[in-house]
Each structure stands twice: as structure tokens, then as C-alpha cells.
Image (cartoon, rainbow, N blue to C red; front, side, top):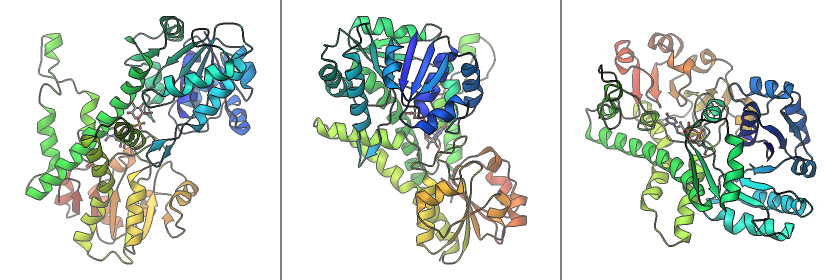
Length: 456
Ligand code: UGA
């Protein structure tokens, strides 16, 4: 199929490259000329594993290119996927990009005689496609939906494994305005072997929010339980989760399917039932807040979601409290913060717990040295607006002569650090494990002062 995708952000670009690799002809459109030039040269504006390799492949096969020309792109395609940002605006999602793009598409569809489908891929709240996108498209095209197709096709990509997720989706959800829209649109996925579910537009929109908010709920639940277990005392939350994860409803025996052995299936959802310093990124924080706002708007009090957000808001501070309990006054103490990205394998620091932790440390007068394998110094300085933090270019530089270290992101290189290493380099070997990635026993054996979420 011939597809145009508007917005070359993380979702648009990954989707475009993957759809092109699966036999479609894709044009990615963006208003940012520099980005377009970069992409056409095979360079990617974001950090994402394997994306540059696949981009170069589809560029050389000529099944993909990028442009700023929206009109030509729509004329030269049968389907347009809207993949522009829906940023958070005080808990509400900002639909201005969606509205502007819908208007532009409408104006072009006015003069296009062939049947064309518009699909929304941006994350939008239930009813947005029907009540915002559809009327704008109809107004500016002077056509009624039906004369053109309309779908809502949410994405379930995770940063850091977006290519893997996009190439091997677990399900494809197609919200369709009418059967014809869905029937034609699904052709872009003809080479994808997974269940394809057809729903109405608002159901597709809700499935996306429900997926993210359930995962966020599991994380906040795990963090609240960590607080309770700390309050009881004498419990390590890691043991609690190990015990829970073995419930065969959470990790079934493989023998159920193969008939032999005691091995378990370890569903990915288990890693969200684990205590840490809270969720971040561009999706969970924004989507939970937006769902809460929608709930209030329709007269429902979202008790669980409110708590999920509140627990997450206060979770980063827990790590600073551990530190204060050990050291006391943090004034002029050198504290190393290991990890700035909201999770490993991405350079994304949006809503990263690291930001809240660093701010709190600075407020307490600490001297902060931070490190991250991929986040750039300029990005973090801009976010923090504090010239006072030091950005170390190696782990060693970050922890050398430090009074304490806080591990915020579970990067592989941090997992590999031994207690001896911390002991050798630091002034006082105090390690706060914000992701519970170390063996408590090994650290304690080496006389490192080890504390972590769910183990005080
Ligand atoms: C999330 C969803 O997982 C995707 O399915 C969805 O498409 C995406 O949002 C989106 O809406 O665009 P992403 O934000 O990239 O993807 O990250 P996740 O890997 O799910 O991580 C989100 C948060 O959960 C992070 O703070 C991370 O630290 C935490 N997390 C992640 C865990 O606690 N455990 C894990 O195993 C993975």
C-alpha cells in the first residue's frame, strides 16, 4: 500500500520504516526541514536500537523517503497516518498539532478524487477521532466521512525496543469509522502475523490508555507495597516479589503447554511488578493524567488512577530520604547520580525520576555529579536549568571520592558494577539502589552500606 505518515517523531519514523520494510511504499512528512534532510541521509534524530540500520535499508530499496511536502505525499498515497505529538498541557493533552494537521489534510482531500483513508496513530483520548478529527476533516474537505475513510490505530511501541515491537506486534487494533475504512486500512498490515482486532474508534482509543495505565498501576502498586514492607521492617521487597511472581497465574508452568518439566513462562508483565523509583517517559505520566482528566470530565471519580499518580510523584523522593537517614545533612556532600534516562536503552529523560532526585539533592545543598551512558550533558542541563551539576563522562568520574551513589536507571553497565568497585572509588561506599539491580548479600558482605527501594 502507499502510505503517508505525518510526524517523524519516535512513533511516526519507527512505524514508517517498519511498514516500508514490510512491503509498503512509505512517505514520511514533517515540517522540520533539518530532520527531513537527516532522515533522507539515513541519519536518525532519536536514539533507538536498530532504527538507523533499517532506515538505511528501506532508503536504499527506495520504499521509503521523507519530505516536507504534505500535498504531494497525500496525492501519492492511499492512506495518511497522523502521528504528531499530543504533549501534556497541565494534565490535559494538547491537541493543537492534531487539529492543524487534520485541517491541512482536509484541505488537500477536498481536491483529491480517489478514496483516501485517514488514520490517527497519535495517542488521543476516547472520542477525539470522532469529535475532533472527523469534524475538522469534513469541514475542510467539504466531504462527509464515508467519502473518505477514517480509522484509529494505536501504537504499542516501547522506546528502546521499538523496532522489535513494530516488526512483531502482539496485536493490531483497528478502530474503524465504517467497515470499508477498516477493510482497506488493514491491508498495510497484510504481512503481519498477529491478531487484528476491529473495533469502533473510541474503543481503539481506550485500549491504548488502558494498556499504559494498567502498567503504571502495577508500578505504583509495587512501590506502595515496598513502603508498607519497609514500615513493617525486616522484609526485603525483592523476596516478596520473587514469591509473588511464582504464582502460576502470573508465571505458568511451560508443562501446561508442552506436557513436561518444571520450567516457567516469564511474562513481560512481571517486570512491572517490581519496586523502583517510579515510572517516567513520555507515555505513562501523560496518559494516566489525561485519563484522570477525562474521567472527571464525564463525571467519574478515578480513585485508583489518582493514587497511581500520587504514589509515583512521591517515589523519587524516597531515595533522597534513604540518603538523609544514613548521612543526615546533605550539604556539601558529593552525591553521584547514576542514570538520567527514564529507563535503559533510551536517551529520553522526559519525566525521568532522575530529574526529581537531582532537584531534591540540590535543594538539600548536595554537590551532584551525574552520569548516563547516552544522555547528553546539554540536554540534562537544559532540563534542570541548574548550572551547578557536574556531568561525568565515565562512571568512575561520577563516583570517585563520592560520599554516596544513587542508581536511578538500570543500565546494563551499572548492573555489572561490583561492591569492590564502589568501595575502591568512593570516599564512603554508600549505595542507594533505586532499581534493586544488585545482590544485597554481596554488597553487605563487602561492607558497602547498601540500601534500596524496599530494603532499608
Ligand atoms: C510504554 C508502553 O510500554 C508501550 O506499550 C506504549 O506503546 C508506549 O508507552 C507509548 O504509549 O508510546 P515506554 O514508555 O517506552 O512504553 O516504556 P516502558 O518500557 O513500558 O516503560 C515505562 C515505565 O515503566 C518506565 O518508567 C520504566 O522504568 C518502567 N518499567 C518498564 C518497569 O518498571 N519495568 C519494566 O519491565 C519496564
